[in-house]
Amino acid sequence: GADFFKKPAFLTVSGQLQAEAYAVSLGRVYTFGPTFRAEESHTQRHLAEFWMLEPEMSFADLKDDMDCAEAMLKHAVAHALEALPQDLEFFDSACAKKLPGFTK
Picture 1 (tube, helix red, strand yellow):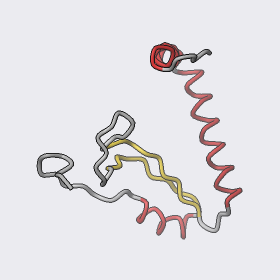
Picture 2: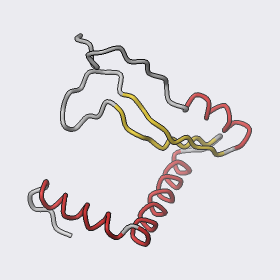
Picture 3: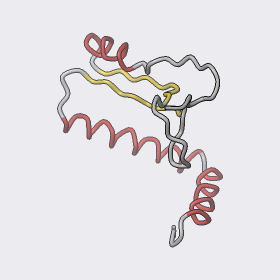
Picture 4: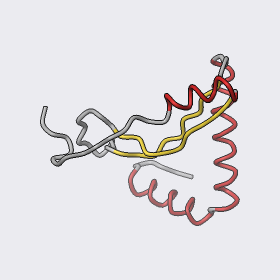
């Protein structure tokens, strides 16, 4: 395929591989950092670079994974509601403009 970035680019893998090693000894760890898309995807719905939170837990099953994801999401939403009301108002107005039928 064509050159995705149209110029030289030097990308790294995510921290997941290193985090898996740390999780074995520490139990639960996470990384937060930039992630780069390797495949070509020039659409409005695909980003070439984005920031991602990657939790790693040793000896966890699917229920443990779901409980962790739910707790992180609840914490993030509660924090946003308390500390970032202007950002949420902006988000509401942006969604109302972009998504037909969007209501609060």
